[in-house]
Image (cartoon, one colour):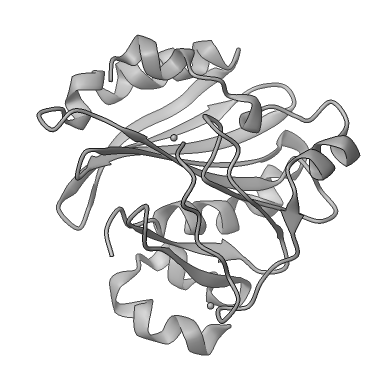
Length: 212
């Protein structure tokens, strides 16, 4: 997948909803589920503290710091794990926008999405460009300012992490490629509430693992 193709993909899930009530209805939300009832998403498109204990040795410090506010989520078909915020609504897949989405019940601008897209077997993350190049294109596509673009390593898998800001929203985006899938993890909140939500959102994004 080229950079142009990636940034041209619809990014409606990263924009403030025109009508939050209408948006919730169309996306078919499910109330936050327990580890025993959490659904996995199989349609194509980009568990309390005790439950997290077995994951703790594998998680970075940022994720461990929010352990009382998140629950592990595992998607077998898509091949990833992530910590999801407790108490947030869960939405089923919306094609080309997200495979799964969690959104705060009270603050609609606070959400986390995961999107997977297929890529050719011989393609890697660097085929999209450098972190700075990709981050600049993403920020431009979102009419936003790129605050930071960094390379990181997820258990031996290269990844890019971007912080993007615009007047109404503050966003984190993680991109990585593994097993012929491009993973895009997005976490967003209003700029006004960024200082309050930054720790949670960074912990969630840092917990993402593109393998089981």
